[in-house]
Structures are given as structure tokens and as C-alpha cells.
Amino acid sequence: MSPSDSYEPVAIRGRQGWTPDARLHAASQLRSRLQGKVTVRDVAKAGAEYFQELLDARTVSISMHEDEQYRELVNVGYLPPPDSWYPADSVYPDSLFPLATQDLHEYGGYFTSDLDDPKYQEFVGSRHDPEVTSIMGIAIVTAGSLRGEVFLTRGREQKAFDRDDLGLARDLATSFGGAMQTAARKASAKARKPTG
Image 1 (cartoon, rainbow, N blue to C red):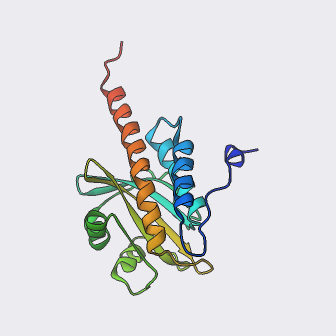
Image 2 (spheres, rainbow, N blue to C red; image 1 turned 90 degrees about the vertical axis):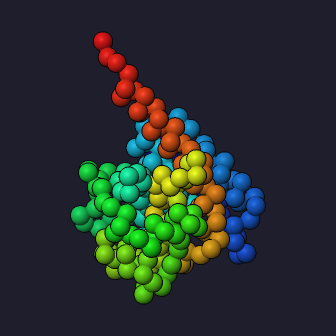
């Protein structure tokens, strides 16, 4: 039995959207799944797996944002070659994604299922997966600054992301971002600590 088998089922979206009870349940579950995770990579992986399960995503990628660059930490779900679970040295300027980055800054996220949408075209320019028909990006924000992104996709057989999914994910990204920053601060402090 894997550790994820021991988790209770994730919150479920009702016909009318994510109810207040489902939102509270999801927030509690995310905190529980992040508990005890120490490294940035472990926090990112646990968060990505939870977002994938909760939002029925085809893929989820977690990236950090610093100095006008994204650094991809972890991917979960279906990954077409040459993508990897833990990309090594996957750093790219945010200028490759000007519209998505602007929406992360201004609105805390974005979603689209319009294949002609310029944000979708930015995605296609970076990773072509013809099965992806809906994308959503969620800002990881701490202290009022963009610190990263949770990026999700859905495929042809899945319902497109919508405003209610974005609202739930933005709420969850607050606690997720806090856990990511805590892990990053601890790693930084450990790296600065003199040895011997």
C-alpha cells in the first residue's frame, strides 16, 4: 500500500461548483498532505500530487519564480518526452510567457480552453502536447510577490477548467506557497550554516 492509498478521498466538486464545505475540506487535506515535508522538492511534489488529484488534472507542474525567471521543480501526471518528473536545470525567462506572467501578477492566475487564446499558444510554444485542451496557472504568492506557479492541464476527455476551479486553486495556493517558502528559508539557512 502506497502512502497516498492511506489518504481519505479528496473533496469533490458538486454540480453547482465547489461548495464552502468542499473548499474547507480541500484546504484541510492540503495542509495535512504537506505536513512533515521538509525539502522544497518534497513540498512541491506533495502539492503537485494533491492538485492533480483534487482538480482531476492531466499534468501539474510546480515552478519557482525569481529574478524574472521560472525554475521548474517537479512535474506529475502524464509527461510526454522529453519532460521529466524532476527537471534538472529547467530555467527559463518569464519573457517566454508574457501574458501568463502578467495574469499571475494581476489576477493570481488564469485559465483557458480556447486553443487560439494567446496564453494557450504560449504553452504550445514551450511544450507541445496535442492532447491538452485546457490549461490553468495559479500564482504562488507570498508577502505580496509572485514566487512561483502551479500549472495544470486537462485533456480531450476531460471537462475544461473554469472560474470556480481557479477560485479554489487560488485559495489553496496561499497555504501551499507558505509551505514552499518555509522549506526554501530552511534550505537557505542550512546552506549558510558554517560546518565543522
